[in-house]
Image (cartoon, rainbow over all chains, first blue to last red):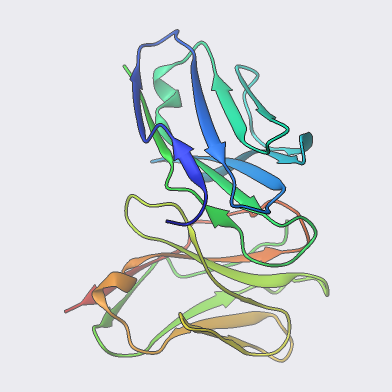
Length: 113
Length: 109
């Protein structure tokens, strides 16, 4: 157990639907990062939050959104799902402002059918 | 983001040392060199990081060239559980980690 909890572990849904992925960061970590990993794209950075505020955005589609709540957990919302959104979605957390390692969760495997 | 170059794949025999190279000729003075690995069906896992001096921890050693334009991750005694994709990443502060394609390490029993 890395200390970063992601739920659900697996999700199967139909095209056009909306899903929410949840991430609880490691205790004490204020920063949360979301990544997408598909077979042909590798690990792609989506978005970063620090203490509830958005800090950086990567290649995140407009159909996707995220937020970080006062208790520091984060949710990634994916809407109008397409087949190409099928991927592993990872969350990572870190202590802000340091050069220590980031801790990743075990991911949510999303399958869009 | 400064770029790193790694071999696509490497093989090593079980219980032998493994040296995974990484070139980063455009590294800036404030960039730390981080290594992560990703085992099959798992999230990336932090391995080690360093700035200028060589570093050791329970998982591995990191050897950094004097000019910092290259580094080597050393697994002292590879086991089957070390089979993974290893990523060398330049990183500073609270920035996002940018993953390349990494080196797929295969351990031969």
